[in-house]
Image (cartoon, rainbow, N blue to C red; front, top):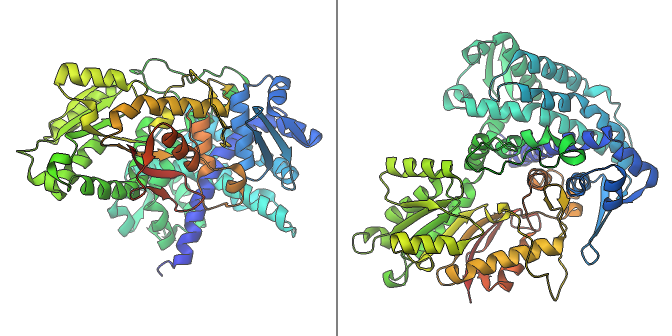
Length: 539
């Protein structure tokens, strides 16, 4: 029986709640272990600076952790950017939630244990822990559901968190391993067709049967419509799950060495994220954004030929896939594409990571696409401009600048000048290597960043997809409708700076880069927006 529109909405809400759990469970359990949650219950309110001092914590990461609990509705956050104070208070859900946080022990233990094993394989030792979690979950972890609506809501919330962190990494491993390819999704199969340890793997599949994702007859499994819904959206889990290396090190990040995951050499593997998994998850999740980008590209390169950009530069080109996609859109679907002999298209891929540059060169060469691939720093457009001019005779300002989810991931630089004339309106929690950053400085830093880029993008623009935060109060009022908690956790604990959409656009405009309102789009199209697409141009 096919799923109704209401069914699909409910299942999407489940995915969001699962992502909440992957971020919240290790965060809350770490604070529980250290006594922070009990302290909050005892004192009812706490200033984050004083709390960090008492528990010898890294204030920035402690603030991120407490903001996550606020986004789940378990604390109330008060951010005063005028005085650079952040205060957290308990509410009607706090006591129930903090008591239930002990139930996270098994999944957090599994999270920490799994770091000793292969990232993709289902090995026996971590599986044994997972099997125990499955059994407890099927018995609701012994919870006697309350008749009080608030208590019942928190109980269900915590169980959904446990479900998410138990099955999220499994879904991603299966998705990356090929189980959600068409053959398996359309046919019946046995456990030994997919995994050599059929006994263990069948127990995983049996748990999915319990969740209603599979039907089982004898030893044969087949996807249900519900299971197909999740299988087709496995990549939605990829980005959050890719940060599990960070989540398993939260105790050390918050209460110990804040730089334990810092790797200052770009040629070495990242310690805080599984980048291969992150790219896989991003690829699936970002398709809807690229459709909007395509519309903008087509309009720009269908205009008068003499008024078009001479080409495209993708800062943070990664593996070159986005640049390749844009070239294909222009060549196949625009006026410029029909006139490339007379109006050749300059393509430039720039990245800070030498490995990314090698991969981009190889991928573009394989696709028979000519491009300049060069080193670039998101914070130093002047260096990129000089390199392009001196080595290739290309003016950076003659190109359309594009980038995806990059500006928030620039290295932190303290602003040269303070924010003047106003106070930051952001509710975000921002850090640099454990130190809590003043939100006014985060805004001032982005303002200076945009001002460095303005001379080079004022004519043809900066076409950008960016990630954003929302206030914890708004997130807590919209469970199942946003992945803001997961975004705040993954980016907050890894020193990335996602601001609210309106705050971001205001700073861009202050720097002289104004959103083209005919192309501006946000996802979702509401106050819950955590992604925006902008064509920022000079006035």
